[in-house]
Image (spheres, one colour):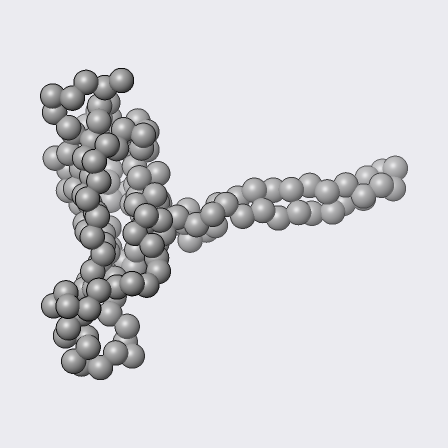
Length: 152
């Protein structure tokens, strides 16, 4: 089993963006060039996840078979909340129904672990994920190979 913590406010995987640039060719006709890119916030977060995973994984060979992943997502309590509401949130009695979405955080983390922990995130077969408030924002990641399972 591999366990590591990704510190900081969790970031969900963002959609790819596109930008179009219009240039004038030598013959005087306009030419549009479209460039697709991943937003910097997603790239930076995935790099942090990969780095934390590399430290925890310690150069072991990549996992080949199916894996089980558990994500415990911790969001900061909004500073504007009263002491009472903050205490309720930290006790788990007020749950975070705010962005980022749990599935987008899962996608960012799973993609970041490709070629770091496993060959491809298609190997993830079982997922447990929880999103709560905490004084220390971040994501606790636990990865466990699923034993006695035959890979396709």
